Image (tube, rainbow, N blue to C red; front, side, top):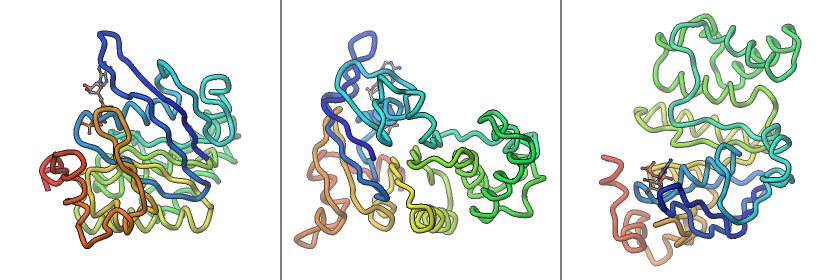
Length: 246
Ligand SMILES: Nc1ncnc2c1ncn2[C@@H]1O[C@H](COP(=O)(O)OP(=O)(O)OP(=O)(O)O)[C@@H](O)[C@H]1O
């Protein structure tokens, strides 16, 4: 579903943020992308979602070439940025329906899709509230509902649970799991929480200084009785727990 070869990004000014990343994510996989601050996670995600042009390398996402066929890639992916997209002032159902119309749906189709997305994310009853009246966890679920309106096959989530309380985080994990179970969704997410990667992800990919330095199923990485914290510290020399302020 996602395949990259030598994906690289050097910013104007010479910062080599991503240096030759080779990634492979299969259909229906939930993959966690971890790394210390400044390692290149967001830059990689922005390239994979067509928001940033790679300096070099190749990639396909959902069967289409990232550079040659960006429009087709965009049609098939959902993206939730760190800041999300819910409006603080407008009722969410109206915003969702508008977004659906942007994707070319009629008003009736857009409202039906919006209601379906709300139901899927357990938000029914909250559709008339503006973003400012929602809890952090509800807002994140609305952000995901927005990303689902055009029926993507792969979902990119940039730090989906940052700032949420433990209960809301666990609730969001359940929703992500059911998206995979019910729709076969592929999910690629960044996180600063090792417990999240452990509980939710089939596979963890660790990036440091723009290069992939480790990858494997959580159980593989923890082989020998080490915790993921210890593995991460050992590989990167930095404590993700401290960086995340946990
Ligand atoms: N627009 C830009 N121009 C120049 N340098 C940038 C730009 N965006 C990011 N960088 C640099 O690229 C490197 C990677 O940044 P990136 O945001 O991808 O890291 P990250 O792993 O997502 O970090 P964090 O966990 O703090 O969000 C950093 O050194 C950052 O300062």
